[in-house]
Amino acid sequence: MKALLLAPLCFGLCSCDDVSMTRQKKDSTYAPSSVWSDGASARPLPEGTVAQGDLAREKATHDPPVVTDGLLARGRERYQIFCAPCHGLTGEGDGIVVKRGFPAPPPFGLTRLRQAPAEHIFDVISDGYGVMYPFASRVPPEDRWAVVVYVRALQLADRAPLAVVPEATEKLQ
Image 1: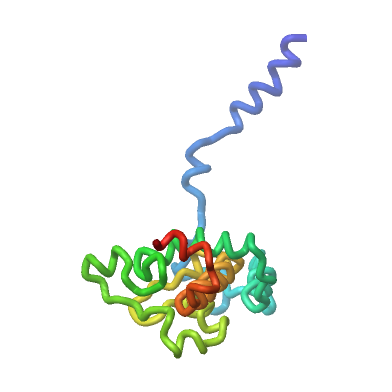
Image 2 (image 1 turned 180 degrees about the horizontal axis):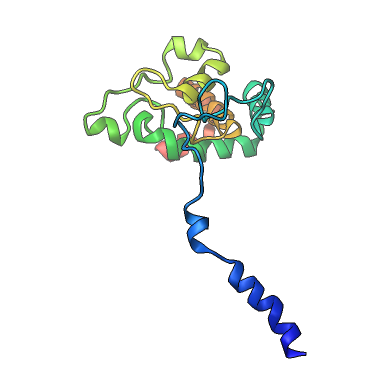
């Protein structure tokens, strides 16, 4: 009985060979290959291939979300993390990085930035502009739209008369 139980175990242990597992015949990514007619080991993607999640990401990029208090709060949080070091907490372009010598970004209160469509701000966040680093790989589309909403709120607050926010009058006195 023991021999019957030990036989599969011995067979399994004897069949393992570490050397053949580490020294397999294979082509490196950019090495020439005789297997394919074009001589390349790296193969092109088949026609119509879409990476997992690309369609949802593309949809989120082109469809701005409905503005809610939660979206505005998320935008404020993301803005303070990714944007405030250069743009400052109020969007004046006076962040801590600028105070250390980095070129100042334009203030959000400029007429041309107020008149720019939301998609432009989204694209600048995504692709960068001038010396601004692109954030598409670091900030998901939903959060980029949230930052756009918060930037618009900063723009509105920049020119809001004090009468609009009566509580602020008390705090300023």
